[in-house]
Image 1 (tube, one colour):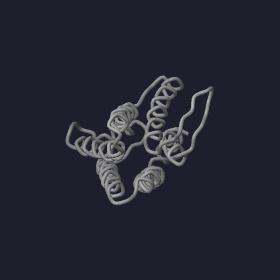
Image 2 (cartoon, one colour; image 1 turned 30 degrees about the vertical axis):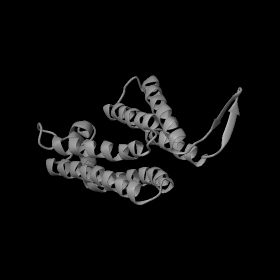
Image 3 (cartoon, rainbow, N blue to C red; image 1 turned 135 degrees about the horizontal axis):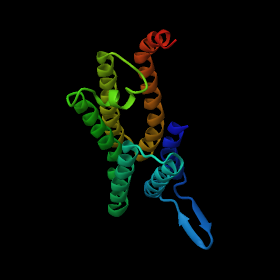
Length: 195
């Protein structure tokens, strides 16, 4: 459910972008959707709403979610103020590359990397597996960030908007599967010990 909620702002961004050129009138107020700019405004509103609702239901906030909201507001705001879509197109790259640096750097700071600090209380894995898992996530963030730029600069804005939605779902699913494959042998070993 949590992952589904995280895709909602991206899905709304995609949907509003598809309404480009459509006009709506509500209570005497008329708005014509202008593509990337209307979609960016909706993305900003939906991301803030997501953070507020997450806090209302859980009474906690993940730092990652707060950083995501900050990135959306800064890059989305710059997109709207300067009327230049490259700001919002760079947001996924910068956000993912910052995560790659943070996860990668955590390998060298302290006794536990970021993956072990995050999940270590829930599952027990050998140190080398935590390192491989952390490296998998670093590679994911680096590749996703790079591919975003390839699509943003090499293809049309419309293609990039579609890529943003489908790659978010696809890469998250792929990362989840690879993570499960990496840790599943150790989860099986853990079950007899618990009995």
